[in-house]
Image (cartoon, rainbow, N blue to C red; front, side, top):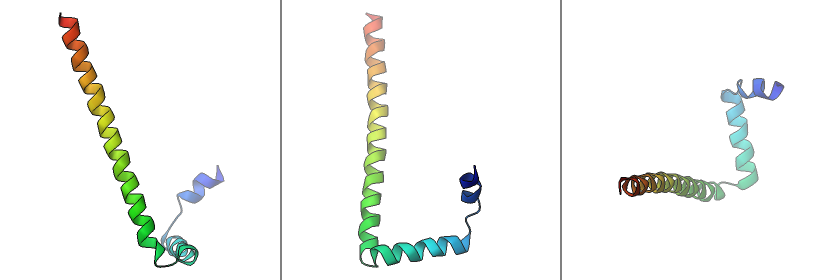
Length: 69
């Protein structure tokens, strides 16, 4: 329960601290590489979700055609 309360209280100083820690861990040269990888992962996820929606819509239309016959 306490962790939920703490997550709601993240402000400017906490974000700055997180950024500094990330810079110390990964270094300045690795950050763009990590963000690029994260962006491509999100894009692939969105494409896969859209593909699932298209598959379900096409399956529904095929089912409707088969029911009509």
